[in-house]
Length: 125
Image (tube, rainbow, N blue to C red):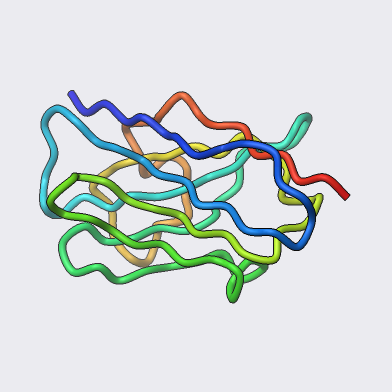
């Protein structure tokens, strides 16, 4: 069983930056992908980005590319989501996910077996 805990959410003004972290514990595998999704009220949970734990390759939603950086810290079993130039429409609960998937389908929710509790990000105008 894999446990994921997100942290770093909060309130930030539009144009600002925020960094989220996801710490993994329990049984993990080197070939896991770690992903970030977000869900705003009344909307479907959508893909934000992902990173391959093994080689560090990153993948981003087209609409968010350029404002995000996903990185990993192998020694701490932690992934980070750096978000810049935040907009009010970025307001959502951000979830960390883990699963054994492939680069062609990293954006699919059903590819991930483990999910964190989520952390709230609110961007004020």
